[in-house]
Length: 192
Ligand code: UP5
Ligand code: MG
Image 1 (cartoon, rainbow, N blue to C red):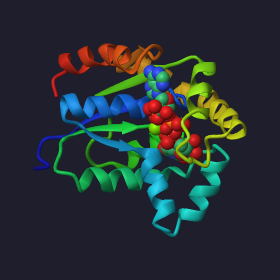
Image 2: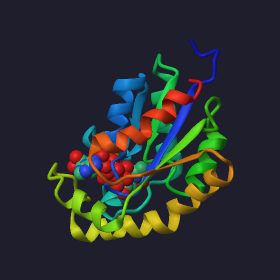
Image 3: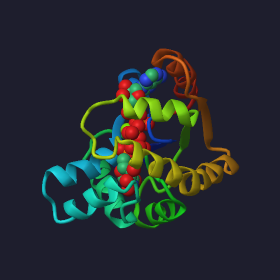
């Protein structure tokens, strides 16, 4: 089942821009497997893995977990799946993340497309602070740090894929359904 290279979509956007919400709709409508880098890392915390304590400290500070840790989790998830189309949500967050992924991955080292959910900061903050799901990083202090890290480290990655002609920028305001109507035609058009 691994003869054909997988179809890889990176899903980027600031904290609370709606990556996870829209990924769920893409899964429903187009049969992708959703791999949230943040969820994979949070699973390491709750399963008390050897890196759990380090990951928790890093997420609390809104900082970036070492690339090799995150890439290995993504690699394992892709390799243990029977699907051949993936949404990698919230990764790569830095140029160093991106280069490490390209170096480590045997298959799927290059994304087919990259989505960018472009959302105003005040809207992102409002969504994150009203989420109420007990995430250790959903507080005023950490959200400010997450936004700073997004602007300084993730925007360069987004620009990189824009220059490569792989970026689809979505205006991530309005209702969830309104935003998905911008996402749907992208997947309806690409050869998956
Ligand atoms: N919501 C969604 N869409 C809405 C809409 N259109 N209108 C109104 N409300 C809307 O949405 C956020 C909230 O808004 C939800 O309550 C939703 O119902 C509502 P969601 O879809 O969850 O947005 P998302 O973009 O997924 O926000 P999230 O907070 O998950 O983004 P982050 O990128 O901040 O979080 P992530 O889990 O990816 O990463 C967390 C931390 O992990 C990072 O800060 C970092 O410390 C670490 N990390 C790494 O170190 N490396 C990685 O590679 C990945 C993560
Ligand atoms: Mg998310």
